[in-house]
Image 1: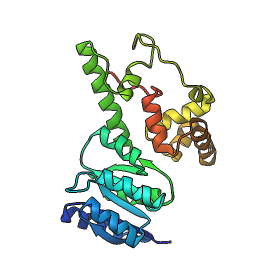
Image 2: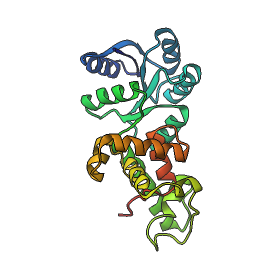
Image 3: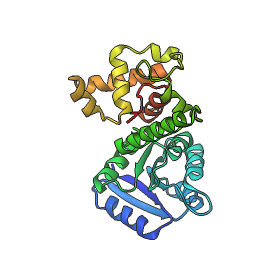
Length: 248
């Protein structure tokens, strides 16, 4: 079954490059391009692609607004894969809130782009390890900056990271959410590995179990935590201190 893709970016060379990469892969067809968010909304309605590769910063209607509109109007199809050159964790959270299924940096390899399109087209969610690491490092930087000034971090995610972890890391005790406490030890391990951006295959290798077993654990984690997909599991783990940023 051919995956129909709409490529959205305000730079013609970037659009052309992404289209060339994707069109070269058997089973993927670029059915259209758009130069801004408004054109993307119209094209998504007219072309009915399976995946929209969405830039963030564009003139007029930006990619985050366009993502929110497309998801609100069409539901799970098309899936939106957000692509950006900007290493900003606020874009990540805004993209997820808007309903994006994946988030990838534009400096990723062609193979990573193709894989990401295939993943979100299947109905799965994708958050690349580079993105996960970027978010965690940003949280750690804010935590260190807040500690240096004697102020608490200003956002919930940074506050979570600074108030969890080994004894002595923070004097602030955070209650463990009931749904998080309901996880078994193995489910907690799986959540921690998800938060590191690990794939099912990597988790299976780390825990010495089969991928089918990992999929079962992931499903139970999402169900118990009331989360939509594995991307939101990463965000949840980050916000609730399941994985604590290194304090380097």
